[in-house]
Image: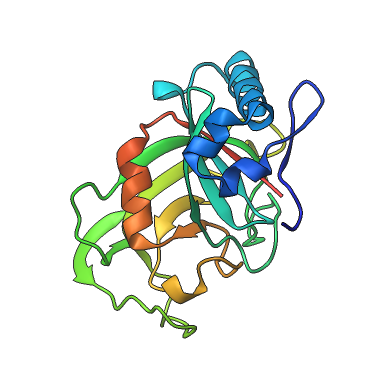
Length: 211
């Protein structure tokens, strides 16, 4: 495995191996399980409880998003973060790091491939590309989880505010590019995958984005 996701939680706790393990492996391996419990406890101490005990972990280096619930890994999915790398500055088109929460959700019950513009369901469908072709635009499809930064000066506040930058977890027309950096700052997912995540987390769920 390439670089591991390292979270600073009472010291350095490597937990990226959990992103690729089956849930049964995580529950039987005490080291990843302990790291996830430390993660959940640290986040609750600093930011309050996450609804349903759920936390989303985005590993930029591995291009994976994982759902952790109650300190145990539930599942992970491939994603696509920014083609321009990581960064929190306005207008950078980079994927911001740090702790966020799901501020709003859009798209419940929308069919796969539904096009959203300014978070509004247009009623239009776009072609989902499963090869390496680029779509005609940076389409936002199917579901949207709008993220709000929780760390002042890092991803919250003037010049670095993730919410004001419209950073989403969302579906994309460019499914063939999932698994490698290709977005304009958001976290893209396959359309069926973003529905699954959308249905399993609530507004207020904590989201950690790390290199």
